[in-house]
Image (spheres, one colour):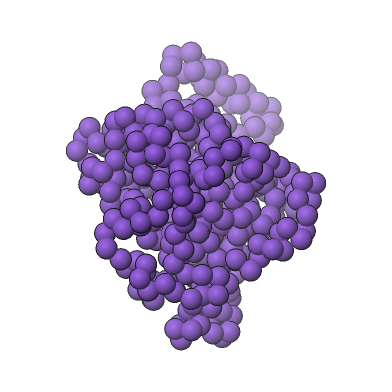
Length: 370
């Protein structure tokens, strides 16, 4: 497909959306991005690990081995958008981007440890441009615009990618971020994973706009609505948006229409606000099923290959769970050492006083750790 054609050809204000690989695995060759079959297979394998890891995390929470968790089952293709970021691009996630962070290179054991309640899980590998998981709805979009503006001022040819959901699109922070990005033409890509629910609120209850993508035009930059369960549409849209941002073309908004098969979080009961029949309607659009059909038709996948992929995935995830659970508890000193770059005098005093307290406790047989 010619460079720039996706955003130019598909107008969200007219309800037009990009789909390249349909639910039956049939490819529209006229729209195909530069994504070789072997690379699609590699991404399918990683998405399979993502799904199994997501289900494992849900089980760990039910067993009391993990805290509240936000699953992404059904959104694997949208999460795979992170695979198209370059090394110098920034990934700015919400709490549902576990899969995106995994594909970016954050170790699975670290992600699991974070959801076990240990902030050390968000210590990303040195040099990796990833911000910590953001819980405050929508505020991470402002952080992404700030990063993008800084890179622009420094002359970097890089982009920041801000993830958020359809619910966050109703937040004032997201409006401010997009307005700021449009005025300053910062190199930022806004990725809205529209999974059609903000906890129990359906998308129809949040906005009267036909699409979220069409809002981009009011901020002065292009928007694109895509089938978020179509990995090839995700690849094409992301590569085009990132290329435009890095080359000085300003921001882009991609609305990835997908569906949240599971609960909002493990503390949510989706049966209270949607029926099982509604969920069943969405299952044939499964992004992994679509890829299996495509890869099978190309001779790149079969039942034997699937069994091997899953066996490898189970081993990888089991090792990550074991490593995460084997980590010793964080020392109390971490709250002093990892809050400020330079500790204020009053905290230096508190740290010293607490260290003395623990020393005294230890001499009396106490077991507090520092």
